[in-house]
Amino acid sequence: MERFLGRLISPTLAVVEEDLRHLKVKRVKVGDIVEVLEEASLKPYLCKLVSLEKRRAVFEIVKELTPNIPRAFVRLYQCVPVKVSTFDEIVQRATEVGVSQIVPVISKRSFQKLPVIEEKIARWNRIVRESLKQCGRHHLPQILPPVRLEDVNPEGEYLNLFAFEREENNNLFKVLKFKTPSKGANIIVGPEGGFSKEEAQSLVNRGFLPVSLGNFTLRAETASVAVTFAVYNALATSDK
Amino acid sequence: MERFLGRLISPTLAVVEEDLRHLKVKRVKVGDIVEVLEEASLKPYLCKLVSLEKRRAVFEIVKELTPNIPRAFVRLYQCVPVKVSTFDEIVQRATEVGVSQIVPVISKRSFQKLPVIEEKIARWNRIVRESLKQCGRHHLPQILPPVRLEDVNPEGEYLNLFAFEREENNNLFKVLKFKTPSKGANIIVGPEGGFSKEEAQSLVNRGFLPVSLGNFTLRAETASVAVTFAVYNALATSDK
Image 1 (cartoon, each protein chain N blue to C red):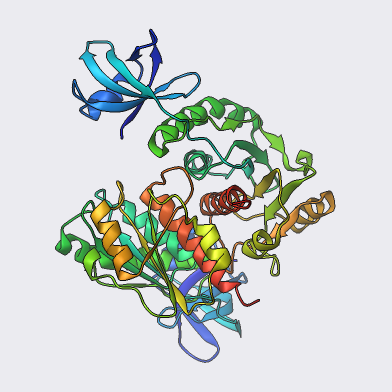
Image 2: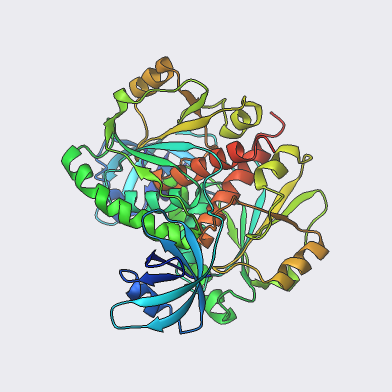
């Protein structure tokens, strides 16, 4: 099912304007059934194309659909890689695997320029909205303002973890198997080169649990999607 | 620690030739300590650069290291996406997260041209060798010749799974939590657009278990890394 962002102009009609180019690329024709997400709320509607005009496409609403939203709360604190463009892929993939909030983090080995990161947030929000359509998600993950690693703190009744390459005992999967029920999770993932010993010790002192993601060193973009996927699904299925 | 492929020329000396450009890019200097992997066996040696020549770098072997190899056997049957270049990323990432064998698969909605896939295998093997160095893995995942989905069969004492978007009950994490010990796993991941109903039914009839990767639709390249990561780690830590 193709999905497009649009807006309701009456209880029975929706229009797609900004997403018109995408709709034309997908060769949607009059009579075709697609999903239109109301661009502010992301509420999904099953819609039939009734008129393809120069600047907009008009749809008849067939029915309102049940929104597909995250079933667990995962906040990803992601240290910004020195090659900042890697963060584009990270926000795209983290959206697919169920993240609710993404916080760009500055750490010892991360990209350092706060104003550059702040400027990128609008771009990352656009990537997130594209990713939403592709993965059938009707909920916008938030991208929060950047913070410094020393200001990241754990929360009570949350699973508070950080991926640490030199951790040998706590494999993520052992932790997830024996964890107690949680309200959600805070996950910290390092940049290329990971965390320094001092950074790791400081995170442990603040109450974060170091976890191993296996015996090979993952790229930052692989680690973030892998750990978010695992924690999201473990939490989302824990009481079922 | 930087890693390079090379070969032993005596019990105490190693040379890097093909990887010389990579070594220069990394600005390794005489006296620096790096890891040299013997290019055939991938055995790792801690080495000190003693001479940087025009066509080769000569290293003194400091000591042999313990190889870091997979701790569980995971075979990924990956349907080749229509945009074949996506497979490059899949083999790179699957190597990081511990896959032992990758089998390109032709299914109803996959890329269809067998000779094109066969030609790509040399390229994928090169990508795998680059990925090995980056992730500190001393074991070559095999890329097997392509097969058709109807010829993929489960194995006894293995976990035999396929990722299925329309599966609502068996979340992968529930399956991994209650699984019995296994010799390894066969995982099948679909192309963009997934499996047809008939393909899924046929896989079930042959003994593959459909698993859900959560309530959002993952791209093929996200699904393959996520499911391989989860199954590898669950198997690798299951008896510890």
